[in-house]
Image (cartoon, rainbow, N blue to C red):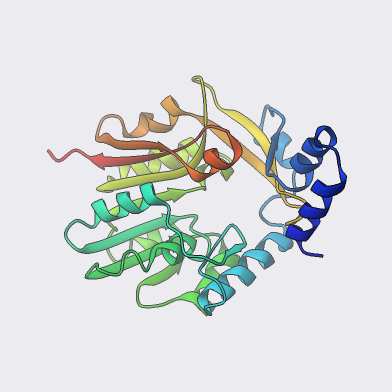
Length: 269
């Protein structure tokens, strides 16, 4: 039985008062705990190294590449085209001259590129460079590289042919052991545009480390996940950048949690 059919069956036979905890456990992403260290959270989770996660992402990316679905995201295949409107607006602003060059850190197998490629078709040129873990890079170079889309194992490698104008950090900072160290490094590189999307934000000046649990109808993956202080997140960019836009992202709209996006632009001396 499909996940959709199972959900219909459950709703038909289970009283609403009992249904809510079932839905939360089996059909929704959950964030649990408040861990004191990455090691503690990591011990309670499987992590992105779980082969099941990568296999699902690879299968969905192949399906999207071959025209079997409109696009993929996080290992899920979507039948109908859709764009992340605020993020697309940021990419279009960054490409105001008709040329878009992006360093997509943690960009999987080109998910954001694939989802928005049709909407970016009027641009004269697109240069999209994904920096990822070695097994993603190997699959990307083997199966998904095009004249526009390339895969690299490090920031230095991706920038060897000239640094892209735009840095994209979409749903990646929360899954790094030390996101603030990375942000400090990236701020020093002085990208013209910085697009941060789908990032959990706390309501105060402190970060919170949780374990994210995927719906059981998808897979059993669990991994450490930060909710970051807005102030600490933006601090490395405060001296040289202005915040052009801030918005609630699709994760926040879906789960009712504070997931935000930010579009930063470097001040021109």
